[in-house]
Each structure stands twice: as structure tokens, then as C-alpha cells.
Image (cartoon, rainbow, N blue to C red):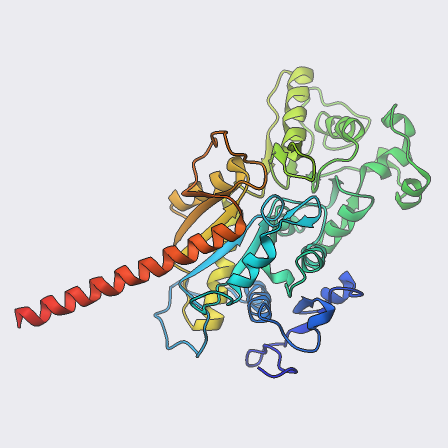
Length: 438
């Protein structure tokens, strides 16, 4: 590949290479792109092929739907040192990044996947995170800067990504969580037409939250509206709440309202709008030496308060890991990648999921692998650099446990090499038996 060559499938748009510094989210949203560290702008790095191919795969996945759902027979693949037999999927926090900084072995692990290994093989990989409050484009920019490598938005599946499909279902929605007004922007980017925030509600009626007052900046970013005349059709918790007390008060008001109209109370206390969470992680790994509570804790708290106030169980929906839909989408993405690059309309035979949280990463991988929805093998690997710590027993048992992400990558590649050797020996044995029978 020359310095100026872009991965451009026939009759399809090319992939743009944009600097990780100075590129805006708006520019990333204009079409298929790869985010590139400045030092690699003059020449594609080892990571370019994976990033570009998966960016195109997600682009194709959004535009193309199979008409018959049938798996096509293998065709002769193009000349490449990419394996199509297996792939890796990574959680981010606690596996690659901790406290905003790369875990020491993360950069080396990516180099190994990009071909710097004793077998000279390149392995495709994606990132599956429950982290919310940011678009896939913003997460791509962050991770490219942190790992100093080429990455594309197409490689990301976020906890709130499935919420995109609900934009046509609801009109006015409340979006909760995240920093400032970011979650409103994410929701509007997903196609939601009328998005309100807790700040908008407090701006309309400051007595809504007795102990929370908006700052000047929050007031400026909140939109004026008469909520006495507004019916909120659904509640979406996109990211971790920064103001638990105020956010929970507003959510409970809506859950017990009459058809999502603030200031009203349903006689049965259960006529409010449905509530959705982008994930259900109780804890997550940060720069602190101990785990910190996350969105799952907010959900548990809301359920307890709703039960105490109404005597009823709160019905809610969570996306992200360990929900099966996240793994189904990841499978479709990798299947599209394999179809684009190798002409095989089937997912890689094995996907190694590397995570640090037994309750979401490992549980989700194991349950999806055991389900009827799985068309291939999903193999769980637990690392000790995040939520899970040595000396404790994981609530859900992984297929393998290793020290860090580099060891996880080496383990998976070595396992595939051994499987390949065993398969070839079996084939040779069968050929010899056939010859002997003749």
C-alpha cells in the first residue's frame, strides 16, 4: 500500500484519514473515517487496515441488509496476512485504559494484533464498552490519542448504541447523565427529535429539586420550556448521573406521573413513561485503587425508592453488556467485515472477548455463547487490571484468566495456532487412513 492509498472497496466511498488532534466530531460524522495520530498522517500504520476495514463494514451494515439470511459458501480470499478465522473484542475501562491513561501492556497488545508477532498474522478487533455519554466518534478520538494508534468509529459499540433504533418510536424524551449537555447531543445525533434534560426541567421550575441549583453555565445551556404542557414519552439514562439526588427526583416524578406530564400524579402510580439504561454495571474501574459505583447502582437505587413509594416493582430495560443485543450487533459487524475482506458471509469462528468485569463482560460473553442466537464461539478472557482482582472469586467463571490484555492476546493467538495444528494433523491422519484402505 502506497502512502496515498486508501481502503476503497469498488463502488463504495473511500475512507478518510483524519488527525486525532484538531478533527471535530462533525467532520467524523461526514463519512467513513479513520482517526490517525499526527505522526502517522504521512503513511498508514500497521493499524490502518483493521481500522479502515471495520469502518467500511459498519458503513455497509447500516446500508445493506441480507435478503435471504443465508450464509454464502467460502470464496477464494484476496492475498492478505489477515486471519478471518478469529477476532478479538475488548472492553475499554480496566482492560485498555484506567483513569484516562493506557494500561502499560495495552499499546503492545495492539501491536501484536496488528502483525507484530512471531506468526506475522494480523487479527481484527473491536471495542465493546458500557461507557456512555459520548458518541462513537468522540470515543474514537479519545482512544486514538490515548493509545497513539489509528482507530475508526466503526470499531466501537457503546452501551447506548442500540438506543439509536428507538429514535423513531418516541417523540419527546428525557435524557439523563453525562457531562454538561453532551448526552443531549448524542441523542440528537441518534435521531431523537425532541430531547429534554434535567437542566431544562429545573430551569422551568427551580423548586423541582430543592437542593440542586443550576450554575450560570448550566442555565445558559438549558432550554426554556413549559413542562406543564409537555408529555415526556420515555426516559433514557445515557451515562452515569453527575447529580444523583436531583436526577432521581425528576425520574421518580415522571415514573409516578400521569402519562409523563410533570406536576401530575397517576392514581395507580404506574402510568409514567418507560425507562431505559444504557448498561447495568454496578461498579467500574477508575484511577482510584477501589472500584467506583456506576449506572447499575443508580438503577438499583431507583428500583428501591420506587418500591418504597409505590409498593410496586419498577419495570426497566438495560442495554449494553451483558444484554444479548450487544453481542448480536458485534457478531453482525464482524460477519460484515469477513464478507467484505474475505468473501465469506459468516462471522469469524471464534471471538475472544477480553474484559475485567465478571458480572457484565464475562457473564454476557458466556450467556451469548450458550444461547441459540450465537452463530459462532464467543470465548471469555478475564484480566486482573480492572474490577476483578486476584484473591477474589468471580461471580461468573471465564474460559481463561490472565494478568493483562497483552497476555490475553497472546493466549488467544496461541490457542488458535494450536487448534490449526491439531486440525491439520487430523486431516493428515484421515488422508493416510484413506490411502491405506485403497
